[in-house]
Every structure is written in structure tokens, then in C-alpha cells.
Image 1: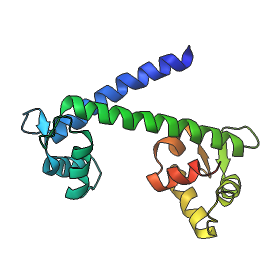
Image 2 (image 1 turned 90 degrees about the vertical axis):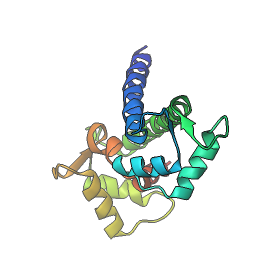
Image 3 (image 1 turned 90 degrees about the horizontal axis):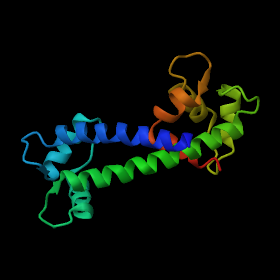
Length: 165
């Protein structure tokens, strides 16, 4: 039951985020965006897709094949994206618990290094240090799942965490 409430709460939060992102993309208010608008708007949102990538995104979700996506198409795509993020977050939480050997809800530098060295591609000492420094944003010598680890890691580091299994 509690997971259901969290999902509903996330869904509402995501709908608001999707609407905000749409408003950034569709600045002329015509309720459709093309590849150029996606590139421009995505940069405002902190992403940096190429025109070719934006054209592919449109081709993948443009139901009526008019070269534009409307809000409904955009919302469907973004909802799927958030579903993937939710799944990844659950998997990262599992990995985190696996390596939180003392059950404190935090990983210190040593625990994180041990976890990162257990993934398929052996990370160097420097890469482990870089990962820790990226995720310990308040510089307290530990990272916690609720703060930095789930929400502030890069896509590369998110994938590293998912690879821990």
C-alpha cells in the first residue's frame, strides 16, 4: 500500500516536471515541437543532444509522422523515461543495501571502493576516488542513498551502480 502512495506521489511530481519541460521546449505555444526546438530546449534543461539525436527521438515517438511531437506524445515518452528511472532507483537501492554492511544507511569511502571494485570492469583507485567525491556532495566522508546517491549521480555512475549486481 505504501509503495502505491509513493508511486502516485511520484506520478504527480513527474506530470508537473513533464509539463515544465514541455513549456521550455514549446516556447511558441503551438503545442508541437520539432528537432530544433528539442535541441534548444534540452540545452536549457541541462542536456546536450545533437540535431540527429533529436530527429531520432521524434521519429521514434511521432505517431502521425508529421515531423513534430505533440504534448501527448511527449508525455508518453517522458513517462516511460521516468518509469525506467524508478526501476533503476530500486536497483541502486538494492545494491546500496548490499554494500552497506553495517546497516547505517551510509557508505564510507572504504565500503564504496569495495563495492565499485566488485563490478565487472575494474575501476582504478582514482576512478573510485572520483566517484566518491561526486557522490559525497556535502563532504562529510560518507554518502547516503536518500541524498546524493540516487538523485545526483551521472548516467555513467548510475550505470556503474546498476552493474554492481
